[in-house]
Length: 195
Image (tube, rainbow, N blue to C red; front, side, top):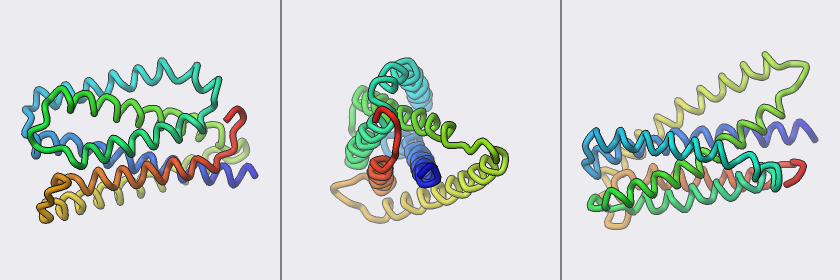
């Protein structure tokens, strides 16, 4: 039973890592599609930090009451919903809407990452920590590399599509939506006390 739960945590960890990497494509999206100056893009990184700090402050009381599983599922579907919005944003979107979307997107994603990190630490086997951590780091690097390459390929495809419904980075954001939904579904199978 513990091994099955550990596998689920690892899959969720790698899915959330993929979501984080693809969500990072918002920076070139803001620069290339929305044509924001680097000053505003710097402010976006501050918004990311601010939302992550807020998550860190808010997560503890909720995790103690309802557990990580429920919060991961809710946050994963929150990221998925916001990714659909990102995919359809026109180049004329006002800056305050971009900031608001980015804040909530990073809030939900930060929640997922913190809680999955918590579950990952709990799932590390006592007798073989170094081997386990080495294996996880190797596959995390592989997942990160493949996700980044796929993200670049999706941008190239999106720029050639010329869709009226989604922007040129829309395929990347739809991939974020798909991976976030997959993460939420995978986490439904987690076994955790209090969830």
